[in-house]
Length: 497
Figure 1 (tube, rainbow, N blue to C red):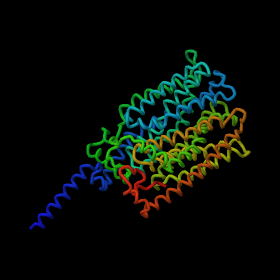
Figure 2 (figure 1 turned 180 degrees about the vertical axis):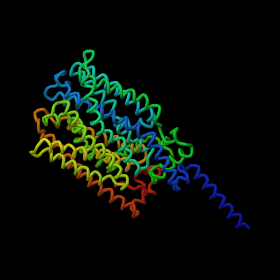
Figure 3 (figure 1 turned 30 degrees about the vertical axis):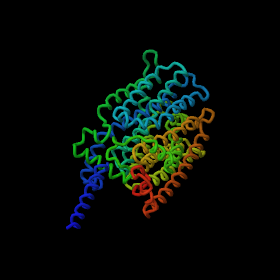
Figure 4 (figure 1 turned 120 degrees about the vertical axis):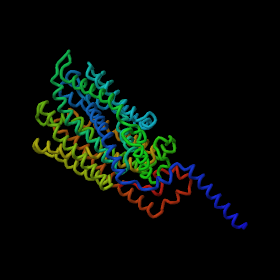
């Protein structure tokens, strides 16, 4: 009898202990259950309809407002403001000083201030600065506008990546990054057509190029004001989801964390310098930041100088603007195709290797002695290779960092390091090197070769680390300390190749 009472007491104690553990556990047992595929698909479709189009518009306007100075240059900006020597290149470089400095702290603010207010707020701010650029009368005014434009745009790219990572699972993410990032090459095509039309305006003492900035800046401000009302801050606050869909949307993100996060809702995660250190010391962060540095050099120089490169093949300003459209459209479709394939194969590295190889062939075509038609053909291959690479390398790092503040810090640091390459990109194509620009093409060729090496290195590292975890080689971490502080170091977490 005593033995029976003792057994009952032990069972009761174990039951109470289990209940106490459950009450202190932030991720419930339900979070370990599979999600209904039809419900998951329904949530993804709703997110695609209600979020992606707005982000596409934001990034389209960002790239138009950033690179329209290239269009304005061949429509009278350089002559009116007396941009001789390297003044134009300096004006391009000034943009990236604040742009680099704000990347990491801006990412920390995305969740704190609410992405639904913060991201459109950036849009409105740089739209106003863009409009002001149309009214500048001297070189100093241009430098000031470019500085503040960089300040306002600096946090955008990392913010958009971080924002999407709150809604989409890791192997759904890259295609969605591609769906907004494809606006970058489209901005070259659309921006060229728009600039051609706006440069015909002569009114109120402002002729040709000022109207490119004034009208495009006004469109940006209007779009930002509208966007505030439509994008949600987190899945739990998405008005277009039902109560059950909201719960499932939060639940599926918990499943996708594979032990890297102990919080069921992103709103619950708290900032800690522990997460910052983890982001900085991750091997993926180091390699992929340098990789992004390498790949973004040809991207920036291509976007900024394509109209000028084509004009030096022997075409007048109007034809040069129009001839930028076809290669940029190739880049547009390449981004969509490559990011779609990448999510299907659940791999980022192979896409990077393939795209770099294509772009390398393009730059070789630009360097060889041949006809303008061959050189123009090279711009198509460059576009097809360089435009899909940034979403691939950004998505690769976002996939391999967790939880939220590790990802926020890592992606911000990646962008900060990568964007320092703009100081190279803005000086790759100089007046003294035209019309062939061999130095600029050679620099970009070298950067693509570096990206190829870094991509291959990270593929090998990720495969090695995943095999280590599969064999139980990292299980000791579970008993070293608090499992909730492991993040991406959790033995159950697998890196994306």
